[in-house]
Structures are given as structure tokens and as C-alpha cells.
Image (tube, rainbow, N blue to C red; front, side):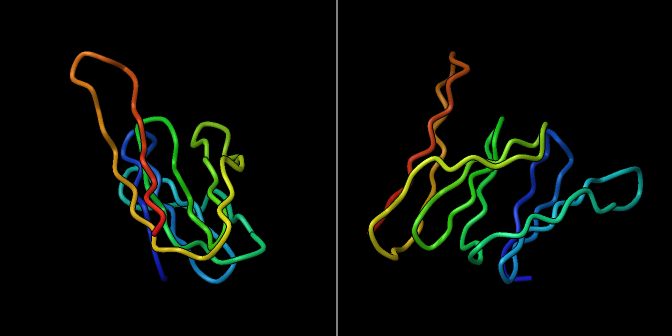
Length: 103
């Protein structure tokens, strides 16, 4: 296991390793395997928000939907970079913004 992320609302544990992400769901007293997602490259970041899970790769980012277990590419970057994700929540708003810093 290289990286992991926990999505509390959906009771999911995402474990990233060599060219794949394994999705587990908490059921009672243990985790059960839900899906194994094979990708062209190894994930470098897993960040959970309220509605989505942001997965960072060497040169692109994907938004993983925990309801449908599907991933959608959200942006490309030109070169390899450091990854920092910060979630900013507004007190009286449903809107959640995730800022991804690329250095």
C-alpha cells in the first residue's frame, strides 16, 4: 500500500498501489472488496471530499464518484509536480472547492 483515502460518507477505503486503486466498503465489522480499478499509471494522491474522491496521477487528476464507482478526468498538467490538495468549505453554503497546488 502506497497511499490511501477514507470517504466516511460512503464508508469507503481506497488503497492506491502500483497502477491500481482498490476500493473497499465497511460492512458491519470488516471491509469487503468492492472494485479494483486498473490505471495506466500509479496514483500519487487520494483526497476525499463530501461528494467526490480526487485522485492525482503524475500528469492528470480524476474525480471518482463513490456512488457509481466511476472516475472522470478533470484536468491535465504539463509536467510532474508536487501535489497539495486543500478543501475550503463555506459555513453557510453547500459549495465545496478543492484547490490543487502544482509547484
